[in-house]
Structure formats: structure tokens, C-alpha cells
Length: 171
Image 1 (cartoon, rainbow, N blue to C red):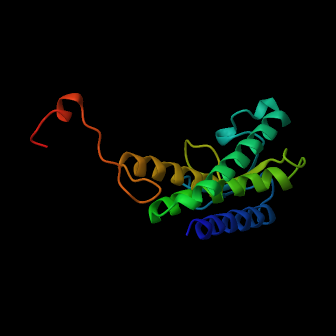
Image 2: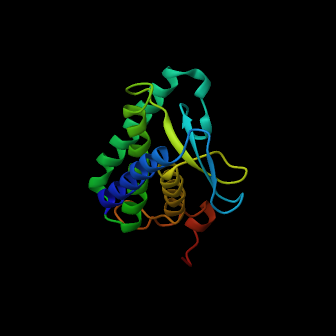
């Protein structure tokens, strides 16, 4: 399931970026739902929300290294997954990280310095892409699963008790 979700996210991300770059001029804006949803090409050399863009190629190389680290950790952790929700969660994160890393490897201005193509714009929000959406959704799901005490193996962590509860014989 993890690999299937990751491949689906990666395919949707790559196909959508290729289509949007082919269909829109660099300065063109398409209003899909009035001002609620707009499509426009934005090339992002930085991290999420353009953070670090002013640091140039060293930051882009660093973001590529971080993405490779995240991908490696997810793939190594995948052997322990016995939970469908965690497989979907980590698949979203893996697909999103791989999608943006693909841009960093293959897009202008060069290998591990490429700029990520962002193209979805909502009001009062930075421009983003399918990979970014998958990363955010995967992050939110990871927090929810962790908060509910669900482990990668599907077992639930028993809620911790305070000192007073630990000595209460009624439990």
C-alpha cells in the first residue's frame, strides 16, 4: 500500500507539473473558481513557502539531501509497517518528497539545484503543488495517528498514567 500510494502521488505530481508547464505561459494566471482557486506557474528554489530561496544553490542542495534522508528513513521503516493508516501516511510523505526531489534533480538550473514547480494558488496561501499537498496531508495524518497512540505495527500504545493513577488499585 505504501509504495502504491507513493507511486500514485509521484505520478500525479509529475503529470500535473508537465501539463501545467506545457499549458501556461510563465506569467499567465487561470482563475478556476474566481479568486478562490488560481493556477499559475511559480518556480521555487527554496523549501516550503519559499523559505531559504535567498540562500541560493547551497540551500537547494541541502533540501535535496534532506529529501533523500526522509525517503531513506521511510523506506527503512516500511518493513515494520503493519498498519494501513500508517502505510497510507508514509506513502503520502514518500510520494511528496520524491516528487519535489525529482524537480530538484531534473529541472533548471541543474542537478540537485533544480527549482520546484508550484502551480496551485489559494487566497492568502503560498503557491504549492501535488507533492506539497501530499506532504502536508501525510504530516497531519502522522500527528493524528501518533496522538491516538497507533504504532507502525498497528498496535495501540497504552495511554500513560500519572503518578497518582499508577498507584490507584481501582484500575
